[in-house]
Image (cartoon, rainbow, N blue to C red; front, top):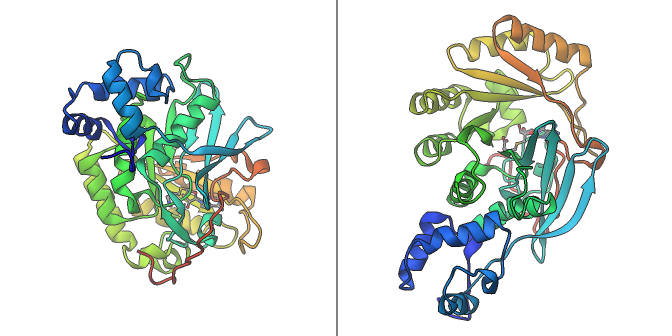
Length: 361
Ligand code: SAH
């Protein structure tokens, strides 16, 4: 590294920071010290890191930096949900949402600018795919939210859970999502238990297996349909990894993490996937899996082309699942007055390299 290309230490988890310090002839425990300063204390100025030697502080000032996404706008919903538009470069912003509920505070984090998967009912899909976020741009959303919530220096634990359910498909950006999640779990950073970090995927099967090996957190699957014809239409990556293969991957995930359970998300679209017959089909599909189900009433956006199921259809669907012993909740719609609800995140993208539907990977 030289002065012309300073390394952003926010891109490095503990393992990578240790390698960095070793490569510059420093002791590897510096990694822990830096992580505490940055993630627990919210300090980004090396000069303030008083337990580092003067030489090291100077060296870091020349060779490294801590660059976080910048908060471009903040919206606060009537229900307390907050949405931040975070600028990650001159042309691109992503959205991050904080959802308080009693003692729990869930942060919904983005993994990509836009999304290549083109799910039929999702606003993010409409803007196409721009690029993957770097580690520092993912964990930087947590860093910024913690600061905005007054969590730095560590005064309270406002963020108790993180869900990788913002913009993008996290399993298509694993090289960066995994180190960012390692920092969420790190005792010296955000210290969240594995059950409090959830990754949601539209069904990237090889990524599910890799996640089991590299960073087994809570897994959520965006199911949304119980047969391949409909799922091909709603979640086009199903053409590559159909339902049977997806559920096999879920079984392997549970075999590797026997105490876990998998959340299945199911968006309720009026007249499309919300019949009681489909609830019965779901019961058959999920038999034998430790599963719980989140029904998500569709959140509309301009030009969506779908409508939210009627409340009585959602209730009947839920009751049918519950009657078969499946733990099912209907997700409350939060933050819809500020377009912060599931599937409404759009950020801002310059590149609109929308991919063809069949070319979903
Ligand atoms: N790409 C990942 C992460 C997105 S998570 C995934 O597909 O799982 C966001 C969740 O909200 C997913 O289950 C997604 O399918 C769902 N969703 C997308 N658009 C929605 C909308 N308009 N209304 C309700 N849920 C939506």
